[in-house]
Every structure is written in structure tokens, then in C-alpha cells.
Image (cartoon, rainbow, N blue to C red; front, side):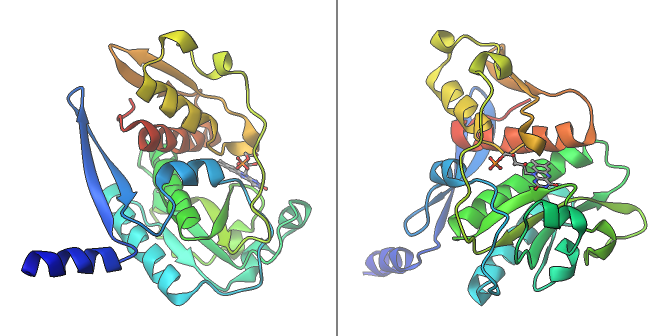
Length: 258
Ligand SMILES: Cc1cc2nc3c(=O)[nH]c(=O)nc-3n(C[C@H](O)[C@H](O)[C@H](O)COP(=O)(O)O)c2cc1C
């Protein structure tokens, strides 16, 4: 009787999430799965495209509350100070944003963290992408933005030992964006397709679907001792991209990247 009630309660909770620990090859990766209701993480990876035009609408209260909860979780895990700023059109009232064709970009997520964190950009990319995909699952659309916003107008709370890495515009899309152009597989991965294990192929596909600054896709995926390794040349944007790409790879393959 008690069991049946519990089962029913869980079924009724559309946002019930299962935290699954994949333990393969001695490395553990946590991925989120939904029981029902929301699209799964793979669907979100392939449905996500940059969207710069939004409807002039506030984010629904329960959606914003879910985002805030996810942000808290990410901050606890990462040591970052990611924030959701709502109803602030000023941040995107700049010439760059205008030329970038941003419209009704009234809400944004700011990636803020300690200046002295050696992997601040990569970490920001990793946790930001986790939020971008969760936002997609919640029916929102997003765009990573490192240049086309007013840094001085940004309402994020930034301590004296912290800095803004970038922002992510977020809202109800006027469109769903479109698939970006991709480099040839051999330019981003040095494992021949015929030799890829299935999980690795899934990871590579998801990595290639990831957003990167000006769609540069400057990363290399390889296999070392059976483990996935993703590298990128040094630079703030390439490190941000690296974190984003690693998150996509891990979420799709269930394997932790080096
Ligand atoms: C780190 C980063 C910074 C970006 N900065 C900007 C930006 O300043 N302005 C803009 O319009 N798009 C920006 N983008 C969006 C990219 O242009 C976009 O992700 C890329 O062209 C791939 O397209 P997709 O996101 O639709 O897959 C940025 C993306 C990333 C990952």
C-alpha cells in the first residue's frame, strides 16, 4: 500500500529527476535523467541552438525557481557565483548587441567566479552549459555571450576578488535557432570513426553540437588508455569552449573527460 502510494507520488511529479551514477572504467560520472515530462539530455543537446530574439515575457515563476535551484546546486559543486538576472534589458542595450541582432534579451545568467581560480573559464563553461541544457529542457532558449553585452551594465554581484567570465542570455525564444556549420570530424577528433567505441561516438557527436565562440570549434578529442581526453589551445574563449564541449561529451557518453 505504502509502496503503491510512493510510486504514484513519484509519477505525478513531472520534474522527478533520477541521479544516475555511471561507473565505467573506474571513473564515475553523474548524469541527470528525467522520469517523464521534460526532454532528456540528449534531445536537449541536439535541440539547442543559439537564440538571440526573445518574446517580451517574464520567466514563469516556477521555471525561474527551478533555474535558481539548479544554479545553487552548480555553485555549491563548483565554487562559482553564477547568478540569474531577470527583467534587466539594460545589459543588452549596446551597439554590439544591436548588431548581434539581440531582441528582448531581458534575462541573463552571469558566470562569475574567483579571479585566481586557474581553471575559471573552463569551469564556467562546464557549469554554464549544464544550465543551458537544463534551460532548454525547461522550454527556454539561450545564447552564450562573451562580447555582445555591456559588461559595465551587468547587474551581477561581483566581489573584489571575483570577475565576470561571460553571460548567457535566456528567455522564451521567438525561434529555435538553427544547426551550426560543423568542421570535418577528422579536424576535431583524432580517432578514426571505424575505431570508435559506441559511447565515444555518442560523446563526439554531442561535442560537435556544442556552442563555441564564433563557432570556432578549436578542440581536439582523443582516446588515451581507453579514456576520453579533450584539449584546446590556451585562451579565455577556447577554455570556456573547452568546458562547454566537455560537458556535452560527458552528458552524452556517461564518461568523465580529462
Ligand atoms: C564562449 C562563447 C561566447 C560567445 N559569444 C557570443 C557573442 O558575444 N555574441 C553572439 O552573438 N554570440 C556569441 N556566442 C554564440 C556563438 O556564436 C554560437 O554558439 C556559435 O556560432 C554556434 O552556434 P550555436 O550556438 O547555434 O550552435 C558565443 C558562444 C560561446 C560558446
